[in-house]
Image (cartoon, rainbow, N blue to C red; front, side):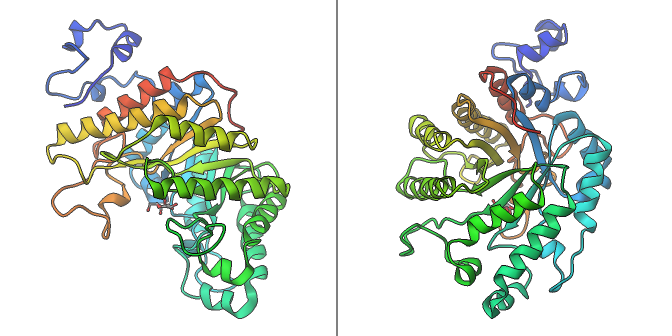
Amino acid sequence: MTKITRRDALALGLGAGALGLTGCGVADGKAPEAVLPGVPGLADRAKPKGLLFGAACEAHHLDQDPAQAAAFLRECGLLVSQNELKWAVIRPAPGLFNFQRPDRLAAFARAHHIPFRGHTLVWHVSNPGWLAPELAGGKGEKLLEEHIWSVAGRYRGMMQSWDVVNEAIEDFDNGHPDGLRKTEWLDALGPSYIETAFHIAHAADPKALLVYNDYGLDYANETTYRKREHVLHLLDRLVARKTPIHALGIQGHLRAGRPFEPQLMTRFLDDAASLGLDIYITELDVNDIDLPRRVSRRDARVAAATEQYLETVLAHPAVKLVVTWGLSDKYTFRNERGFKHWFWTSRPLPLDTKMERKPMWHAMARAFDDAPMRPMAGV
Ligand code: GLA
């Protein structure tokens, strides 16, 4: 069962009776949005509040699936390079680049005048096998420079922002005083690899806004609290050293059913914003693995988790951008090998596999409608 809000109905000049709406706006049986194409998409709901909304996609989602491309254009005002700019995709061998997949995304963004957002220049995952030995062999500085300069430089002028460094803070206490994750980059270059990466990215694309991106910052538990402290400490250090960093990216991979503490989340956002940084929600989706199997119940819980989260974060004026990690349940890593539920297909995103709007879509639309206005993010 899919919901249409009263606001949607009123925007279309339709009375509740005409839509068969009762009580809180539940229509009977069919998905009403599927036959009401005039309802504005999420980016249009976000924009009046100064918020950018977009989704992460792979090239083939957009240039080989017309239904997904149409849904993307209806809903999104920003395109994120889901996996297409990761080292494993674009660096087949030392000294070689293959930009075929990201170039297809860039062409789509350009053709439709949609800002592009890059993910990610430095990460410990999705790297080609040849990288670790090269780093261990003392080529770290040269590789960092060559990679960021070539990749950020190629898309210079068209990126709204770049995730420069992804997930540099560890979840558990690994003995590092600053909580830095032990990666090949840290081993090769020491903690300064983070600020070096930001400096190179800024030189390669001076107009792109530069982001430190991480996960595990959302929920109410000791692991999260410790990670928040380490992230704030890292950001503080970067800002104090005049590193060109503009935003904290909070991935927002939610897990419905986990305890969420709005006040503590707000305090964390306050602390990050007090450093002069914007805040981006960069990879929103909802893990439904702990929820009831029945789709209507699961969808309702996913929507409720999304709404509670967005109500809290969007109330903060430093939050300028929301991206979902995928747009429709047709393309989500949560149904890929290694993440997939044993018995069911996950439904973590605002559109279903037929591109119809789910309760999560309505939760997001309501959260955008209810959000206070703020100065628009740089585009
Ligand atoms: C992380 C990464 C993304 C993506 C997601 C989902 O959050 O930042 O690139 O891989 O996990 O797999």
